[in-house]
Image 1 (tube, rainbow, N blue to C red):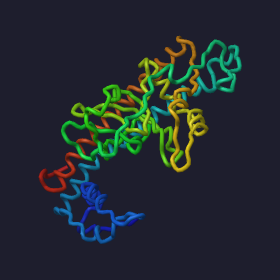
Image 2 (cartoon, rainbow, N blue to C red):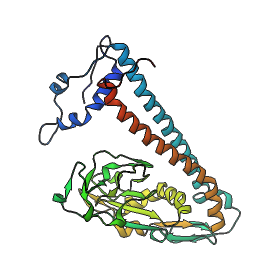
Image 3 (cartoon, rainbow, N blue to C red):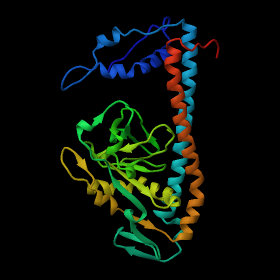
Image 4 (cartoon, rainbow, N blue to C red):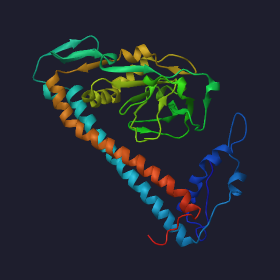
Length: 322
């Protein structure tokens, strides 16, 4: 790491942060070395930055910070909403608090007692589960060209409803099975990673990009819930610690940890009677709708901020007052 200290009589440090953001790809491209690739200190010392008067720097920083502050507010809202939904899920389907007065029976599949009359199904019975694309390294490019489709990889999966759409690969349209183009609320799950903690990490795809189609890479599995009303239940089932424990026991490999498709398909899911599922859905569906709305707004805010950033920093758009 390195620490950059700015003369605050010359440069507003928040403005300087956003200037560095505009140079992020160049900074990544300035890495040198073989095993230990790094950016030399000299690169930063010789980096040229546009420097408007200090008051205008402050105004630019205020405008861009407004977007980031609003994004953080919405992210915190989503954390609270998801924790609320998870608390209801655990109360009903892990601790069985509303059903304790009923009769319980032992489930071999889950290794615990469950309410009588409830079922245990495998994940593949609730969802369509697909393996990622297969293509050769010479069929991939790393910048958009007409006739190519962007492909998400494991490093794009951040978790929850967060997918990073930077650093994409691109594959020719004719190499992609239309079945493997993503749809709204598809769940992308990391199936292979050098870090075992990241295997089983998943995120929900929310398509706000009307001009692009997205596919998914060879180390990702797609989970598409058959019944949209089951989506919150499946999402929370995959968020529970029991799924983490299941993945940890199922992964194989040494340097690279892999989750087999058959193991994912056979993950056991507790299914209560339909009236209980419907009552649960009516409670958590508004929470999920708000999470999805917030996440789409976050994506829009980021897009506006990233569009404004170079215009403001390079003086193509001026901020006279805030």
